[in-house]
Image 1 (cartoon, rainbow, N blue to C red):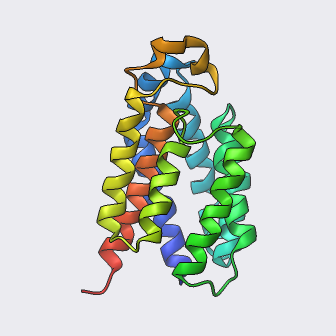
Image 2: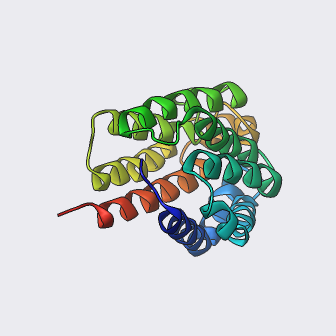
Length: 204
């Protein structure tokens, strides 16, 4: 995972733009099964990271990930902030500066496990974990970035058929079925954006 300051800055810009583009949709998804503020919260979090992008981009990748996670915890709020923050801070703490792709995937698995512990959730609970698990599995198989992006977006859509067992949506019981999970959706959008960047910079 050799990313320089230009790469990190570009990814921050792209992720912020993608969340901004879909912010209203994320809010609508959350209105159906939550309190409707996921789009607003994610926009606020990505804007906060964007504001610090020059400082963050100057850091080695592990430290940059850890800083992004901290900023998201402090700025997103709600349930999503601690989950995204845990993912990125654990990933940053576990990575060596010269980590290769295999080491990144292994560290990602540990970071996802930390998210599961933090959220007391697992596969099928209708959370962003239902995107993270398939993405990590696709990375383990060394799938192409385009394939991983498709996997993420498909995984988010699959949460529509699930009954929520964690968070505010869990109070709806069976009524949560038929609605895509907003956290899974934002996670898929970010994963697909990152994969798109890697697809474009991949040598032909």
